[in-house]
Length: 283
Figure (cartoon, rainbow, N blue to C red):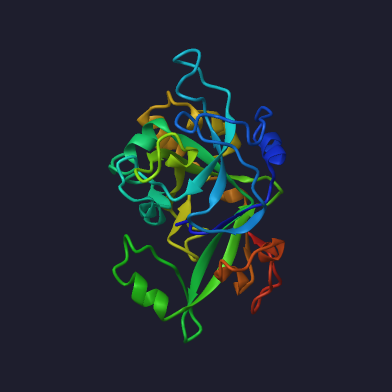
């Protein structure tokens, strides 16, 4: 799964990293048609419900129906709110969409077909369970493990950050949606909420000792295909299997990250553990 991540780049840095055209921050746009762009403070402990930056493909009102670009940067709320939802709080339960079912689940299928995005991240965090007898085991997902809550309550949590070995940002595969808040006047920009979810998949063998799930990370060569509204079901299914785990590094990090009250670049600093000298790569 993906329940926390870090993203410290500003708008200009993200535009350079993702080869995006320059955009004016705060420029007035119709929130009913396309998400806004805001400058966000660096956040090293992003939690569900917060605003995040996302790379989107072309707006649906392009000059030509087959237009593939340009890509652009926008600001979304993490936790997808389906268009039919009665309450925005449902988003807290929809921060992730399982890659195995995203094309079929009513809450996600329309967004998966028509509204895909990339969520830039310095790193994402995952927690391994440490039992009282000193043994470690992978965290599980409540969707697949009936003993998830019991297992989690009896163990301490050891956090890791997963990131590229270099300084490039990860591009988490995401979907996004527009929701109309029925309690706000239609002419108020706050009436339109743009939200997103991270797509997850079964963890690769090199990461499965930490958690049974991992976010899908889209390699740079496949960004255009992921964002292209013309990409079909077979191609999208193929892209969900291309996470470049062989390029990842995994660091044990401070348990300070366990609390969303803590923030700052120190959360990404590797810490030594018993029998470990610090950061490691997977291959």
